[in-house]
Length: 262
Image (cartoon, rainbow, N blue to C red):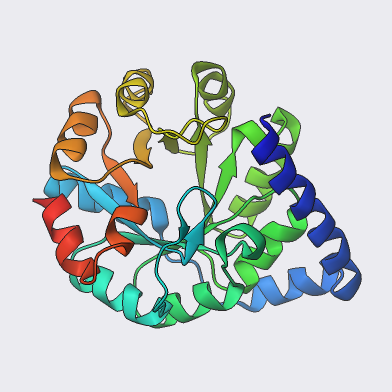
């Protein structure tokens, strides 16, 4: 694991340790069971991709370590409505606060504003976080293989599916892809951002996408800025696209998403 991810994960473990003292897992688990039923995240992506060739997960985030503050005027509900109206299949909401200025409330507000399934995008390291994700209404969680052992990834995956949530498994190289394919999730995300340099390389990502079996749904993450980027990754086999920064830097996020959709 690189230095940046190590620091983020160390901070996240400390946060979870403190949060567990305030709300034990058994209480959080009961809250998760009382949450509204999950919306089918993987199903929505698959149906949209079958209809239009590709599907889009539109992201809601205020900032990032690589870009800094992205959207000063930030309304999760307004963004969710705009994305839904523009044809997004699903939403992704950043809930990490120290590095992305996210909040759990952002996901709650976005999900309430539309009917789209929502991915909780965070650094998931503990089953406590999985229960928290379901308790706040998440329909899917992200597992970053670079941050997890095989054992922990399997444990978190099982916890998520036990609540009826879907799981998007993120990989950056062939070794992580081999590990990810041992898990049953149909959603495999290829992040084109190098975790050490934070630079984007779509051509390397395209090569990795070509190695994903056709029975899995390949999701292209990061670096999608123009229609040509979509076509490049689609030609490699990507059927879904998780896009955030390039949309959020535009005043009209719906029109920006429309341009990517062609």
